[in-house]
Image (cartoon, rainbow, N blue to C red; front, side, top):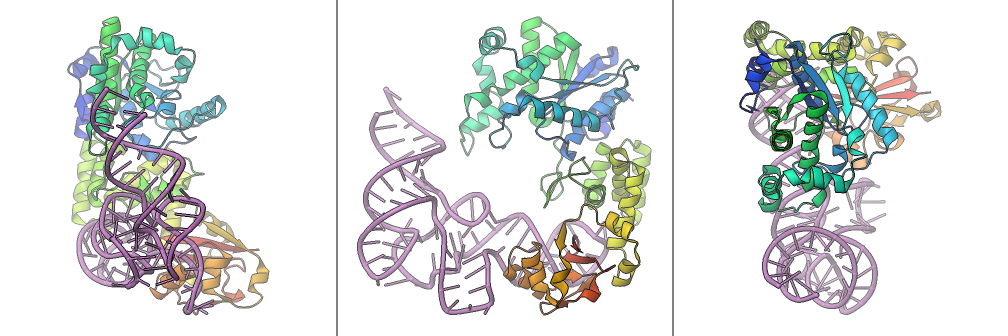
Length: 429
RNA sequence: GGGGAGAUUCCAGAGUGGCUAAAUGGGGCAGACUGUAAAUCUGUUGGGCGACCUUCGGAGGUUCGAAUCCUUCUCUCCCCA
């Protein structure tokens, strides 16, 4: 199976430029995907692009990860993002290294392989490119008419909201187009891949290459990842799901995938794992037979947690899930060793209290809203208590509940739950 | 430079002197049901136990009383030159 076919059955193919499949068959090429270095970690929204590169590399081609140090400062007009901040070079390099480290869990960077992945940063070639040079050497080749016809631009000018658009944003596609040209000339890169929202930007690049050098260049886009309920993929109440364990604990990461809806997990397992088609179909059949066992979600969560965090962290996440969602009781919690307890609750918000607070009995409302910031106001805490939404050490409590020293697990810990899934660890010391 | 429209609680969007902490929808959170799912239903969504306090772009003013009227400032969008 070739690369394009692979993407197709996995539901990762939205559009290709004519000739793309042929050139991939005919020769070994290099292709790139761009990533904005806005943080020192990737989040799971970046994973689709990475997986495209992964399949590309598996098919024998050379993947290039382009860090958008320059373009990231401008901001794509199609995104609803606020004004971008200028990253200083030090932060930029730091983020780049961090991102490379994460990407290397997926792609092979071993330079002894002839299709080893590489990371480049467009800041390196943009920083010395003067405005005058740019408009003369690059801007000349693309007409404003052409640029205006892009959806991302049109939407801003004539769409419902008519936001208007700064010149800077308008320039974006040209800068991204130049990246492609640069990579084409310096790395022989003939293909750019990205989300379907990138189509316009990518074709500006291929157009630029054709007009300036007469060279050939191609595009592949994948559908934007959606959720069955229409929500934005990769976001939870608490924000992005990051690959960095400091930002999203392996437990939370595992839980994210485990909580996917049935429909979504069918899609995601194709996109985010390397399982074969036969195996996925087999898993789906198992899932149909006994949906409640969530075969697909479990496998998806396991595969990804292993790739990103490793076996050991997966074990930990499984154990934590067992304790938090199994038939955990106050007793089972108190039986845990301190070490296990802490590892289970790693990544769970923690609050610290001094033992003096417990010299007398402490009212639950006071604890939740004043001593800690589990709730932002007394009223909210009371409301939630009244609605039967708060548990202490796995036991539901009401608003007259008093906390005593004796309730502390190992004389130090108190497990507070807001609803079913939101845990808080109160540490008394 | 000229003209017009607008800025409301997380978002969208009603409200044009007292009955308005502010309709409705979305989103969030919780409860029931369940598979730690989806769908559905229910409750809740400024703070305070309460008397009350703080909110409708900013600042002043009119009034017994203002999100609503006036003045001024800031910002956004549209149209004309």
